[in-house]
Image (cartoon, rainbow, N blue to C red; front, side, top):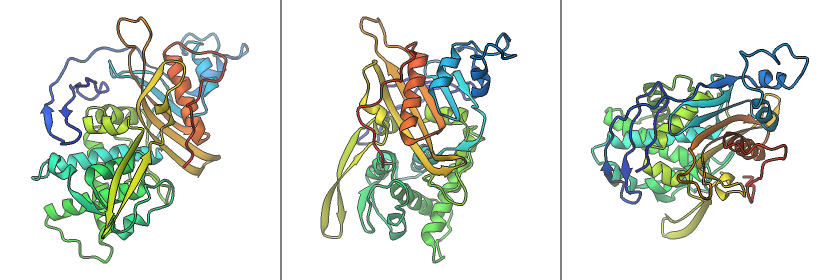
Length: 377
């Protein structure tokens, strides 16, 4: 059982335990006392950088954050970032945490939780629905812009396999297939038949509405959701750092999510008519492959969009990190790190690791270690 807490505006809860293979609930939810956390240090990067200038009017202003934050600001390219303690659920430090920005494929964390919310409300039960076969539509298979899971029209996978296909390679096609499947179930439960020629589109729209409703019900008011995957279109999915950290806290209460979130590779057999092929997916989060500084990434979800504002690539990542220190009586605290608006896909990992090193007191003037390999989809 993994115990986490919510951010201060959401009641603290213990986790549930669920067998990943069966989806059976082992333990339920119970409120736990909230633990007071440190005073948040939330400022803009411009304010932090001003502290480095001896002529700055704010350099000696005690109302501004401590000067050591300037070291962190020099390391990251992110337009906004936040660091949240998993133990206390409090924001430790951050920049522009309330600014609503593009979240790209981090959207899929919300998609994942909306799928589970739909399954919880279904009479068939979560365990049964996770094993239920889904046939990929031609519309879902055609979603190949950006990252995808190489799904083909007519492929048959279980719901659980589609969740892996959505989260590991960040499959926009898998996210669409899940939205279609559960959107149709929502419409059916409302006695609303899909009669239009664009039946798949109607189902996806219904699911996206459920995503927005779920976010609002959890108090995540900054979310602007227009699709289940976050691929750039005429409208973009957006949220702020604070709500993304809260969403990650919520997701970490789901043991199936935790299992998938931290999986490096996954292989399954996909049937299409009489043909069966093996397909393998690699997690796009390179922080999972570790580094030499003892910081471990428990899991994460990547995102990127080309040509946003004045950037060629707008990179994003939400990750949970921990650090084991040799000889320590207990592991160091875990932190949720959220970065938005990084200058490249590679920089989202470099920025996140720099932030992790800062929060664990490992800041140096050298570039932080990179993952052993950089995956560029």
